[in-house]
Length: 508
Image (cartoon, rainbow, N blue to C red):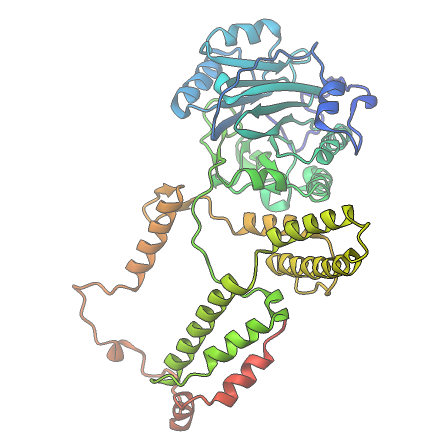
């Protein structure tokens, strides 16, 4: 959309949103099937479906400002041929039924589509998908968002909500309330589109931020209250420009992709790009996501619940009961390696998997409770209850450690919160793509590893053609250590100092 930040009543001043009755929004206890039955509006949409097995999903979003224009329709079709997406989402189409039909005649035959028609010449949402993606069920509650539920035999169902938000504050409030009702469905959810709002001041450039300030606070509250995450991206930091000159020039990131933690758990890798603006004042978004996880190298982590086992203490004691040879740092590193090796060996032999142990113990308790007529069962049953309580405590400790909630008190239980925190941390730490010094972008896990390795190898490898005396190249006025300080740094570290340092470490 073309928007002047000094004029809040632009081309939407005469627009009326046709909201559906509030009775059709899902309650907290509503299931996905009930939501499908209550919210479907066949009068506004056309749908199609086909079953297939697809492991990778690719989609693109385009704010096209009217698909009936020749340059716009040809540009969209050109991008479809170039990127070969599985789903294409278009917003601000300005298209009625005739314009939609004319555009669909140019689309390949193996594609299906659904649309929210424009209200006059304003608004409009249009979604196309390849039939191979699976069964697609469109749902419309208001004219501002089009939901499609995708399901196939090989993957879990998930929702994509294509948004074209109003510029008016009151109507934005209505849309955030509508979308918040979907959170209770607890299935993977992707929200993408033109939100006509920014999340922070840094996502806006040029002119005063006062036009977006109130909308930004409301948008941020919606994202935080629904525990949504903004996907990382590459490309321009702004997705919209008003194409004006001088002091009236404006940039903003109005288009984005938001996901919930269930989406992150289902799609192990993704890549989001902000493409170059060509036939619109908005940048197209290209998102590729895969169900297939890449292989992770196992990293040793000390589990805090191991401290409840005597075998853990014996493994550490055995490792330290050794006199290594060499300098102090080498000896200390060798002892730590022995501790790691002993703990791994002990954990594989002496500690069962907590998840399987919980299931096995609960199954035994269920079996014993069915045989309560035997008078000797009660004592055995009490032992299993105690074992189950211990396993639950260990499981909660493990989850708290994985979530790095060091402030958590022993005995607190909220494993769903722990799992969500872990997923959010994994999203924040996840590197979906990397750019090398030559401007090449790599997305695969193997290419990312190779790029990191090559960068640091080149960084720390001295060029063979350059010969330099480093001591002579250093400035003469650098501060120097005294002889006593130097001797103190290279002295041998005693066991008492190592023990005192380890005891001063914060406990989990």
